[in-house]
Image 1 (cartoon, rainbow, N blue to C red):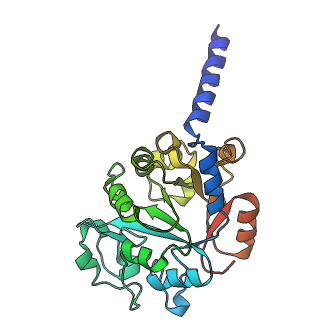
Image 2: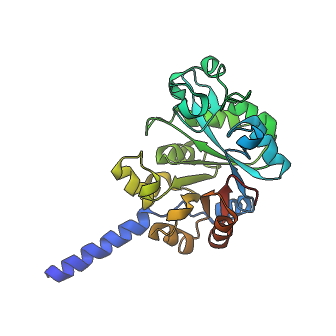
Image 3: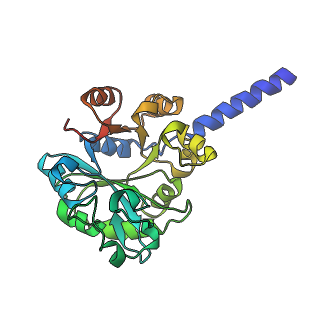
Length: 274
């Protein structure tokens, strides 16, 4: 009886695991995701500091469009509920200022420049006006509080009448769940990586992201996973059993590009042109 109970428990755990890591699983949505995967995505735009073009700047997006590359970018919500495009919450690395984006107004942020260049932190609205649907956008949502979804409604309102194609992604499964519940027509992707790639995340969250157990909350249409840890069993199960599209990041060489495009659906790259 004891052995039978153990077998039953193991089977139940395995079934629960497969259920927890499963994506949304809609065939039509998968087909649309795969059409987006026909593009390569320039990480934070096609930036190059040797050409004085900083990451997540309007010139970086303009250069990506000239090279016919899709664009990955990062969005934060300011203190006065403006959507700005910048990767870090802390402004020290990019602007030389000890401040947090979410604690500042757009008026304050507009006084800053990126990496000592003349270019400032753009609004999401400015990026959309610049791109005008010429290439797809892969929009990562950032938030400091795990369950604060205020950024979601602001982004949805901004994108509602945008005449272009885009995908939403985030490490935060609660943001993706908001879109699944309130804007289910928008395709969403779960960002994730192995534990070593997320040193600033608490250990429990690292494990949940690594194993894609956060899918139980997000139920994404695609996965955006760090290349060097993408041999994770949960990624493989999603890829081969559930047929989930997998985007990999961040590709920084032709060798990585060949690996990424051979094993996964598309890549997010920087520092070179594929």
